[in-house]
Image (cartoon, rainbow, N blue to C red; front, top):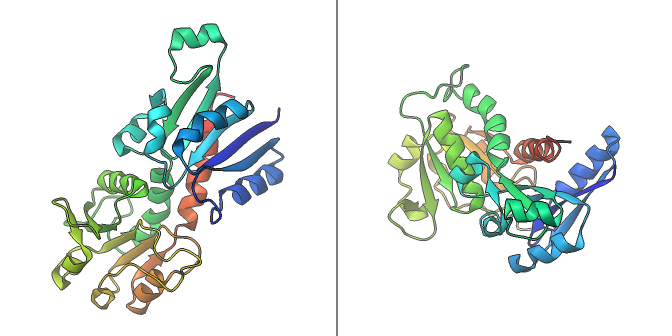
Length: 271
């Protein structure tokens, strides 16, 4: 039976999700379609649901991973812990059933998940083992620590993944606050103490390929792991500068594929 899935966000011109899912559907013989819902305001979300009766699931990207939670009836415990959603399962009910369930939108029950944590954790783990930050069983070396560049929705999933791996973390933001470092505060000592650096900001995304997070790259070493959630271009300026210093590097492509497949597994878990 034909089903429709999609991506909610703004803007979506750069997104890989539609191409990835539709090619996968075609390759596996799945009778489904994946479309983009580029909304200028999250208030338009209920209209999308009302106009798309075949829509069974959604991914959510910038800037709505947190804003969309107000429309959801239920959060998976991991998504609740993260405080951000990138996957929504949509169930449709008769009016009688809706009355019993007390859903927020008529005829619907929406449950939110976060698969970013799955994609990130599974893709970075081999790199961390290679760098000696995790052992083969996944245990972190003593005093392992990471810098998370950016404080948006994606960074929340990265935080929880690092916690689960036993790696301490510090957020870095352009805006000073009590729980973040600023880029100006990244001293040689800070860079030495944090061997994992994750860019969770959109800086360096195509077409702005000549930009990168403003960190002191001169303090990177062959013991650092520099992971960029940006996947277009394949080698970002952040990664290129890190490679020059011998650091281990990876882009967000594997994370995106992993979270996309995990999303589809949630959408079809009860089929």
